[in-house]
Length: 367
Image (tube, rainbow, N blue to C red):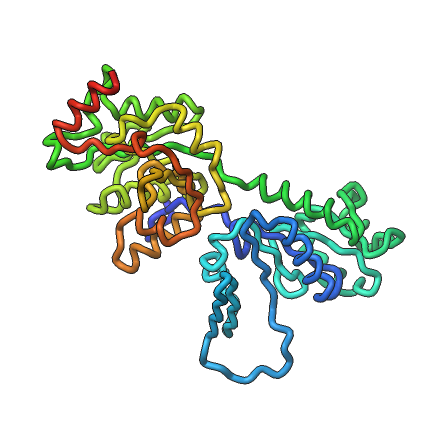
């Protein structure tokens, strides 16, 4: 008998226990762990990093107030009380490239084991948590592996090992772990929109001897990007993604693409910008910054980015949904108010063609 499932089986973001990409450090005291994390994070300042730890305060006064203390230079100190909830933590950490976890308090999906003779009993207590050790750190070069470690994990001596002072080597190893999880890019060509000013579907306009939607798709595919059409209603073609967020225009198309695959970055391209060429596609890919929510084009004479020539990273999905929850369905508003990489170009490349007169003029220029 087929098992009944009352919930829609949605594609989920590839999360670890608490974050999209995390590592727990355990095996020594909390002060050494915290110090190591801060030294490494200074060397990885191009990434968005977080440190997940428990409060070490012994006498905590009951406080109903959650405190968010902002600093004018962009620093934020958060003090909250409550139980750990993996779903809430995944929301909190959705925008981070890497989250370090104090493994003395919380179990991470991946681990760094520190060999500290004074903490042998602590490691023994957490032995079953060491199922994905990425590398080992010795406090002293002469520190021996604990016998129970070799018994449980016979290959443990084959795992890469550093000493605590080799911060640059540790940093480089973590840098590689971050790079391993950078999302691949897929393309999304927006078609089928209502165009009252043009009087017809702009994606079907012929500038180059074929419908512009085909030209846009080829621009992305020629850069080895698997590309889909964003459509209101799908005809069940494999290269189409139909709107699941109805009547929200391009915003809904982008969110629908993320619902289909929340683990990829989406290169969104409109069909009413016929001056976009291969060089511009390559430029945006070259300057892509996966640590930001998105990498967007902005004309040198413009105040705001162009949301429909933009690479949206997986972390953008949660941000878009937060804007939707507040009643906003404008992708530009999300870009303006988020941490995004901006690539400035000549205004002419991103001219929108919206009327028959503009279409005729653009076609003459392009030919």
